[in-house]
Image (cartoon, rainbow, N blue to C red; front, side, top):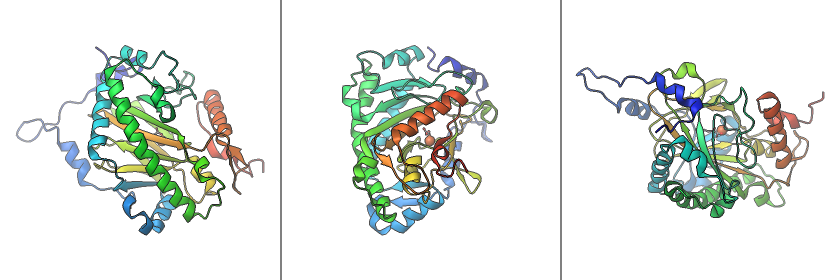
Length: 345
Ligand SMILES: O=C(O)CCC(=O)C(=O)O
Ligand SMILES: [Fe+2]
């Protein structure tokens, strides 16, 4: 039974031999120890002490656009169960996964994709073409419609139940952080909840296959910025891959158990008038182990106008349509610069 999509199967031919220690035993924990020894420099924010960490948070959003969140209040068992259940789903055959989200008119609630992380609003991959070379497969779930999703597969049903619980925590965390950022920036938003609309919450679960020749086969996900207001990521706590651009250098975001990674998206950058940065990041595939990540994205209500001095007023609907058009026509997202006020100068 083959679980990888056909376009990713060539990676299987490059598998690395197991690491051999001096006494001849294979040592699968070596990579894990190495990853966990080295802490990275990504700023750490304590959610339970947020009122005391306002300036630290403000600085992290300005300097990095990325931070690590601790004391987030999500039970470790829930994070572990999500990872385990995701692994089980991905290990199903490709054909089973392909059929798993079709039917019953629930396509907008959940979809399966591979080869590109760029999806249409209904969750299907955006046009096939040369850009569909990302070494990734995934499921996308729309949290606002998750109750409509009634999967036939017991593996997906178990995941749906966990996700409904996880989604509540993500809404709580995103709202708490957003309120704090709005205060720090002194933003005068008439209706703050329409700029971070919990109903738009979307969770992507990704699997990046491993490849011993990982430096030469391509990227899990190429460098990009997120279109969201905020993104919150729970990554496999043993397999690295995520890299973030800081001062023109790529920094590996270490996998550290029981921590979440938060990043500022394009919408937050625009709302903050470029004070906060939606930074480039990318995912490298691992030499020996597949990597699972669970990413949450939250957006403004699609019709609310984003007003700032740096950008012409636009709605998220307009932004998304432009991104999709650019990807279709050129293979690449152009992003915020499309809406800059001085674009014609
Ligand atoms: O899988 C990851 O670690 C990051 C994925 C990501 O950057 C994205 O989906 O926008
Ligand atoms: Fe991203």
